[in-house]
Image 1 (cartoon, rainbow over the protein chains, first blue to last red):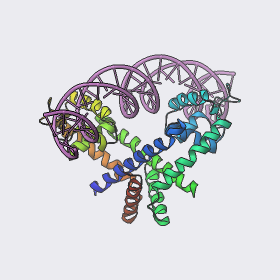
Image 2: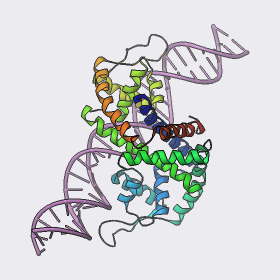
Image 3: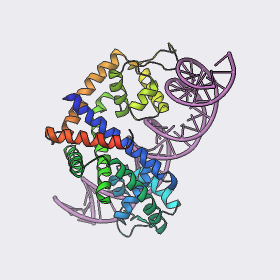
Image 4: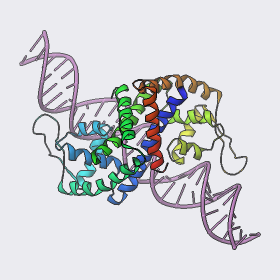
Amino acid sequence: MSNQQQQVGYVVKQAQSLLRLRMEEALHPYAVTVSQYSCLHRLLRDPGISAAALARATFMTRQSMNSMLQQLLERGLVDRPARPESGRALPTALTAAGADLLAAAQADVDGVEERMLSGLSPSELISLTHGLNACVKALGG
Amino acid sequence: MSNQQQQVGYVVKQAQSLLRLRMEEALHPYAVTVSQYSCLHRLLRDPGISAAALARATFMTRQSMNSMLQQLLERGLVDRPARPESGRALPTALTAAGADLLAAAQADVDGVEERMLSGLSPSELISLTHGLNACVKALGG
DNA sequence: GAGACTATGTCAGAATTCTTACATGAGCAA
DNA sequence: TTGCTCATGTAAGAATTCTGACATAGTCTC
């Protein structure tokens, strides 16, 4: 029982580690890391999001996110106002170049996820998602 | 469809990230990181394993593993011969102190995993493990 | 035996991420 | 208004991990 539980944690780690590795390989031609890709991906979904919220969504600290955003700014992939309109949050968004790069990279990354799930039937996929969400919920996510 | 696939990858990352966070909290009293715990845990299962094999089992580079083993050596939790008996591999194993610390920490970590799986029925747990293993296999693990 | 290939250990340096700490702006309650 | 709390941004430094490179030992092929 205890043994089985540990195997689940280990396999979660194994799957995530392998997924990250394959994503790194897929993203190599675009010269972006998995973290950077996750950031761009989230910015497409939530334009104008703050760096702190972006950090939470991608499981990083806001300090690391600010460090990463600086790089993306210098590469012209994202845009941020110098001063907040109100409050302290600086709304961040993709530039046209960032959106273009993301669109191209996303096709390759989607291929990785498709490959990952290629051995699962639709019902098995639902069960997997259900189980993972239950784990997140139980851990207080 | 594409959307659903991305959600699975995201939830895998979310679950792993949250599991790691809870493990860090559980391991805090023992002053070991999750990586160090994983290393000690594997050493209990495979006494005399090489650092390179240990690195592969815990999803790190062998350079990082050697760096970590140095710390564990200084703390007296693991033991390594100065010279290999044959070949280049240096067989590493737990010391008595390392085994004691691991035994105590493992009880708490098992509690985290138990909590993570507390919302799943036995059949759902089997489906989850099955799905994750299929992902690993499809990604070439 | 000679050479190619692989695996292990190690060193040096860079890159990434985290921890700690502080300042600022908004919201809420007294 | 005043004070408290919370969230955001930022800076400085430490810690962790990775990349690139090299030497050594075993294995395999010729």
